[in-house]
Image (cartoon, rainbow, N blue to C red; front, side, top):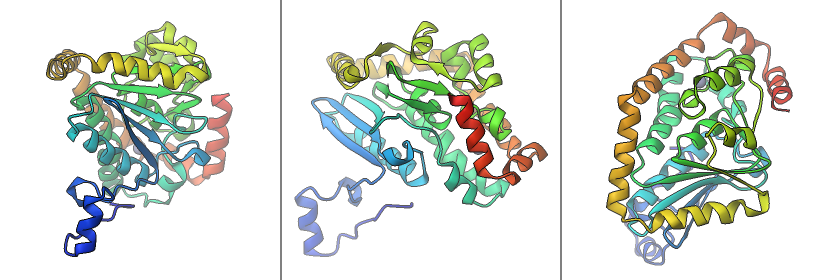
Length: 293
Ligand code: ZN
């Protein structure tokens, strides 16, 4: 995996480093670069941490997010996880510049997106502890799907949501079509067909957002909610989450998510998509920015 060093436990120095907490269990170095990991009481906070790139989700960030989730799942002291972002934005979505540098080959793209996008989102869905998305500023496309695969969503009043993947990239929404499940079908269609932004207040009105607070109160509000949930018996809440998710799964959630992933991958092979790709990244980004205003 990019950005991770696997420690070989063969020198006394490395063993000492492990004992002093410089290395994680599983022998993985703990110095994250593109996420932050912090445990406060019974709450693990995992933040996207590329603020100068509006927390764009590149490979290293997504791999570190996945590792941080593994760590939070394994830690019995952690009862609730908050997923957030440092700086002014939750996440402006996938690192499109990095994506454009990957080869335009169906087989490798499918494998990459299945692991990093679909796989990570289903890990969030199946995560054995309650999760809360803590959202400020931009929450766009790939960021939208990560935030909305969390159990609850707390937003600052400056938060906004956009998925203009169809309009600007000629692909059917992002890889994980969580939208109709959290927005309702009517709103999801308008949101995706137009690619226009939704405010935190509108997200609250339609039931996609649990709380909207002033930006200065966002962290505290998410922590209060997480701490309240952390008081519940952990095994019971794990079973409750499983039952709630199974309710959605029986309504077709998981099958629909997996079916859409294939539809999305098909769109990466179309003439429409190839034309967008050929017209250059700058034009796509400029159009996406106009829509997000
Ligand atoms: Zn894709």
